[in-house]
Image (cartoon, rainbow over all chains, first blue to last red; front, top):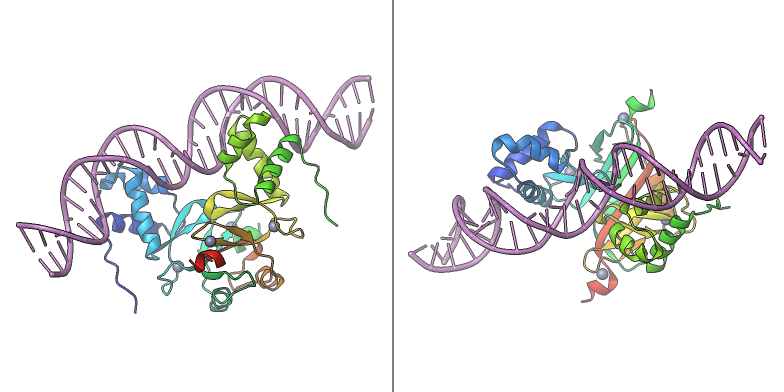
Length: 132
Length: 132
DNA sequence: CTTGTAAATGTTATATTATTACATACTGTT
DNA sequence: AACAGTATGTAATAATATAACATTTACAAG
Ligand SMILES: [Zn+2]
Ligand SMILES: [Zn+2]
Ligand SMILES: [Zn+2]
Ligand SMILES: [Zn+2]
């Protein structure tokens, strides 16, 4: 059962716009889009983004400084994320592969370090771009 | 056999400072450190960083916007990188695990995408920080 | 040696991404 | 009502990164 997170007003506005876009959005592009709704300052956006990342509704694509809605309903905690990124068209999608996540969640080496979280980004060419 | 890359003056200065530090360095902290050597502008640093990343002498830690010297002599192409990051002391080290790299380099799913590169960041607590 | 070309450098300005600091308001609980 | 925790508003600024343009260096082909 998923934990219900009652999003606040700003959080909801910002989640909706990211979710609807279906692709990674940058903070200042979000800011631009929500100015008509009364959100005027970067900090208002970043605060909502922080919270949404924390509760796993969105993820940050680190290599792109962009945010995408979680495409994996079971991933409500942001502790194990994997993405595929097309270096040509910049299409991004969340990889949901149980073998991969199992492998990485259980990964350990001889460093003595306990891993509690990971983020993986694959790069390449998507189907479309490959065939051009 | 490793390809010999004859670093230019700026590239060498900037690689040396990162390599000696042994830990991730941020671009503007590098800039500060190299000002006595005549490198005065951000762009001079970023250009050298770009080139060093391209030839695999350093890697960017995306979640930290920082750069670390390659700790893995065999990793001369930046196409398969993995790091462990302590969320307490921010210690970072490059993971060199052939099973892991084999697993990820061969990873494919049904998206039709051909992955040519990946970057993985593990987070957790290092040995020291765990025992505190 | 000179001509061409790619890579590297220097310099200024500017764009993009993110946080600090401080004041105020809302939400739910005791 | 009093409190604690979360969320909001606003201004200023910090931190990260690139654009644009001029010049110089390295090196190979002719
Ligand atoms: Zn997700
Ligand atoms: Zn593509
Ligand atoms: Zn390496
Ligand atoms: Zn540590």
